[in-house]
Length: 258
Image (spheres, rainbow, N blue to C red):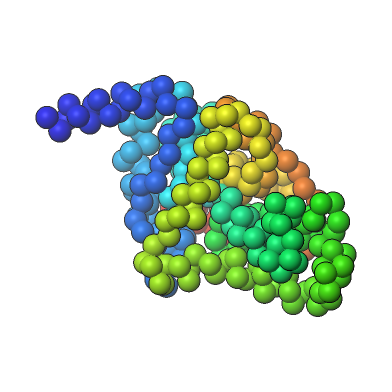
């Protein structure tokens, strides 16, 4: 009975537009996303081959942490084309950044254009050099709104965004609603073929000097998954931090022989 039920459930996903993978161990208080690697790689090694054997044609959306590592694992194990294997990346982090900037500047966050890039985790980067409010640079707009201590303000906001998940996990033992909204947003972009620009996890091929690592970078997302990555202006320091983030992830992959 259970075997037959499982078979029917597997058949149901063959023609699904999006297959969302949330399977994985929960992140515990005090535990980093990268600490989850070994446990969750093992889980993925057991479930991804099942999806591959079904010859699914939809987009594989990875949500479990560490999302950049597991997106890379899913891509390698599944054999799916790169455009069809993506991670939730820093979509939630970016939404938090825009909300905090909007509150700081007393402006609608929908008018704020900014991205968190790199690892969805401790080495993530707020791309301040390309951030703006309706085309006006963050520093200039901040001064319009009476803020002049730009460096301290940006550091505080970026740290608040990075530490948000840890604070939620400490209080609630897990994160639910924020990531659910981020996943909903990505699925909307795919199902509606919106061609929205979202900072999802996808494979890097030489951008900013980074190869063979999955990182969160802005990309055009539609019914075929990733259509194109979108290069954004980064200063020298941001590029260096992005490369450090990629190196940290590559070391984890190498340690796990992936």
